[in-house]
Image 1: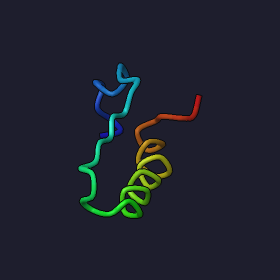
Image 2: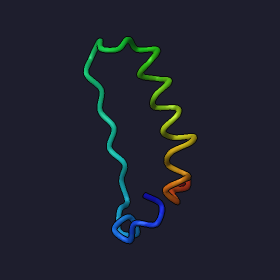
Image 3: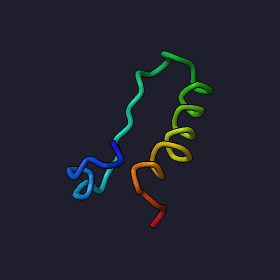
Amino acid sequence: MEDDPALEKITDLLVSFVPGVPELGEHLRLLTTTARDLAPRLGWRPA
């Protein structure tokens, strides 16, 4: 994904969860992993 030229134009990363499936703790873990690991690999940095 890092080399996909379409990503150069993307400014947002949308993440959604189904309430209650899995539990809140797992949602938070997945969101943290996305912010810490996935977003930087896509070239995104905090503003």
